[in-house]
Image (cartoon, rainbow, N blue to C red; front, side):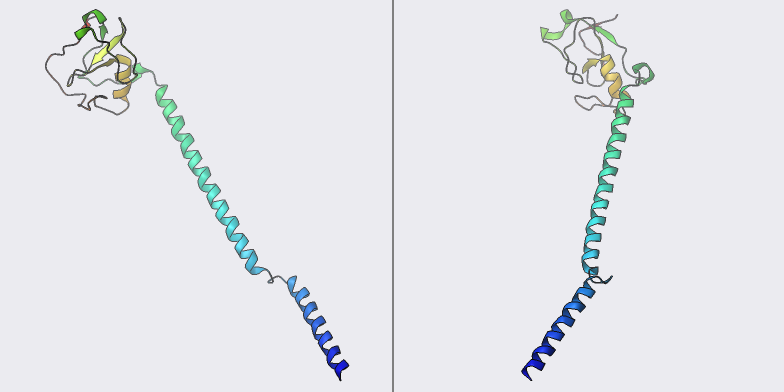
Length: 161
């Protein structure tokens, strides 16, 4: 009887092993693994799609900025109340101190075309302030005074061209 029991146990073991091997190749045996892997793949694809969309938007903004910078200054409109551009003379500057354009940070040189803001009397290169104001910023870059505001006479170290 001991052999019959051992033989029965061996047969049950071989049947379970064969069933497990057959089950391993069935279509639903790794369904849990498949769904987990599919979720990871989909998450990676969504992240990649988001990164591509962000890169595309960045490139569009850069291209738009470059096109705006390439516009000729003559095509840009200067606010109507801006004083005319004048020629800078260092010999007539107040206090003999070096003046610079707050937009491009370059010092004014004799003969530079400059323009002063009417409201606050800040002075900038005419080209710099024209671009600043044409870029939808109707205010002084230094103090944010409105560009169209009128003030008393400007006291600038300038002479007419």
